[in-house]
Length: 165
Ligand code: ZN
Image (cartoon, helix red, strand yellow):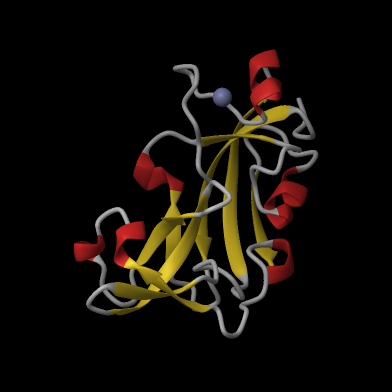
């Protein structure tokens, strides 16, 4: 069957930036990553590239920031009290970490500077402004289960296990 809205696609992927340095390789984590298409689980550029694909296809797609994590914003450094971080003692400049948001959810940030009681973070997504290059292998395409459609994400073979692409 063909990948499209309301299908679950299992993929292996490698993503790298313009320097060709690999950022992430799903094979290092073992199982392919399952994603429910059409529910915002993937960046737009990859979602579009997957449409109409079938199991066994391998392809390459280059995604501009507008279809990935957006452009880098200037003045995105914020000073945040250490108590908002899970393990502030481990933070070092250049590290990426996540921050709980007031409005709920979490945001990926890059540590800029660690002070005595506060941490300056760059709130741009670590991949903002980057042109990303994906090598994708479609392992499986299947119809989504009603429960997956209700949750808006794919479940793994063990049930409610969530991918985090
Ligand atoms: Zn779920």
